[in-house]
Image (cartoon, rainbow, N blue to C red; front, side, top):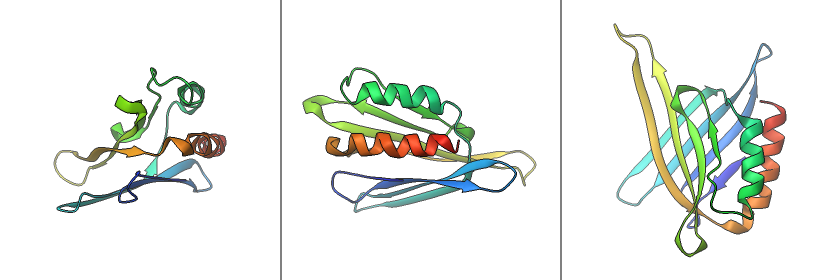
Length: 134
């Protein structure tokens, strides 16, 4: 599934990955703010609260006072927030870690962008499909 910003310049992508032994996700973010371009990808993220997130996201479609958040490994997350003038933002942190040095080094790309509220039902359905593989 791919979630695109209202201006079509930014996106996050979640893709189910089946390694045979366990299930995980590719999580990717691409941000273009004109004077800077940021990209990140983790090819092995596990999400920890899909069931709870799906329930909260379903309520969020009609009640913007709650904030559904999908938590993942490496401090990764995807969060939806209702803001002023009925705008909706997707906030995210895409993290990873490297243990090849004397100490583990953590990396992350954090950001947020506005999305089109017309696609919330489609996103809900896409998340439900991903949940089956979580």
